[in-house]
Image (cartoon, rainbow, N blue to C red):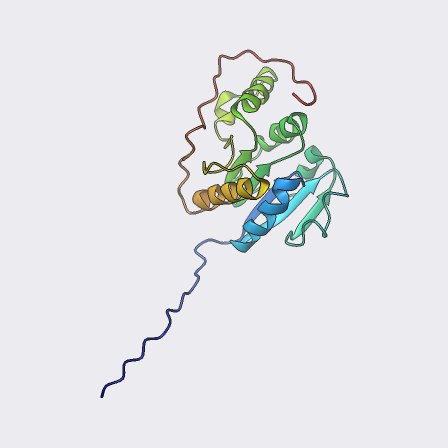
Length: 195
């Protein structure tokens, strides 16, 4: 009698990428889920917010670095390289616009901003009025994340991290059906807090 032994498969996780840094601008609900999901897939996570009650180790135990400072001043304290992924998920349009304005002066591997097409168009129009080139705005992934019908902060975080993985793996193509291109001909409307 011959005995055949079937062993369980062994999975070897091989990193094909070097150190990849993820910088989260904003320490709100979505970021609290993006951070651990991103850390689980080998991103080194830095969280930036101007509110210490949000950017702390209790809320972000998976973050390698926490910075409590105005978002625009954070760029002087971080190194943005071709291996850096920037995700803008702040508490409002004005903060998103201000962080994006400075982020556009850098050359990260990935630059994404949360928000609807309407919000994106308002922010882009305001930045173009300030002299930002439409070509620079085309580098921004907005709306951010892969289209999976996400509604909760957890689902949105999964869609964002999935897009980060896609870009890191070399698949920079957008898969969102709602990521229509920015209409450069729109006139800028004044951005009010909460707009």
